[in-house]
Image 1 (spheres, rainbow, N blue to C red):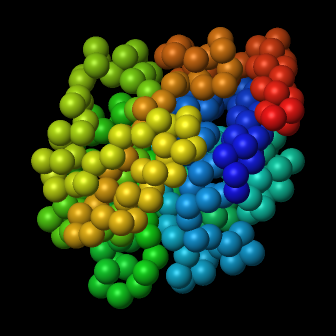
Image 2 (image 1 turned 30 degrees about the horizontal axis):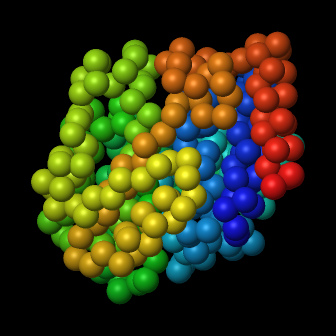
Length: 278
């Protein structure tokens, strides 16, 4: 896809995030919006996946370690063709297969059930190790929150991945500098992220999470790196795309009301119209 096509797709992902979280009256829009471009690039450009064969043995794997941003992942999967877009409005509803955190047993396209912060990366490391042991060519991608990496299990997994030289593993950190309690560098600073991952024998790349040229270059560098896993520190804006949600920790886990939903969708609609005029 061209960058413009990716931008238009990511804008649609953002619209569906707003619609689904509003419908549920609960959820996590802030981090879903900040990761929308990453989700879009992974599923529409980077990964070898096929919605017609979601369990293909040779597919690339994705683990959403920050599982609470499931609305962003579900929106992307729907646009990719894994599930009906209309089903997004069942988010978190009783009996829905689209719950607040991903469920690999119920939702097509989900490779790992996640939600307990810090654990997703460990599953991704296991998948990458299995790929090496089985001499398979698939790659494994996992997305973490920058608040999530305050969890100790993240660094145990990183230590193992670096020691085992899992160059088929890409760890992406959605670095929007906000968690539920505020700025991460004021709650419990994990900085400097680049130095920490490098100390665990990772190849480290910094990228602009909202620039597709930057993301393309980062993932290309990851593919070309041998004998080391790659960590992509993706600098992002929490709530990206909806001006009143941007850089506001209050939208970490709050659903928009009717008026806020309408305002957000109108803003995203204008963004989409501007993109289509390019």
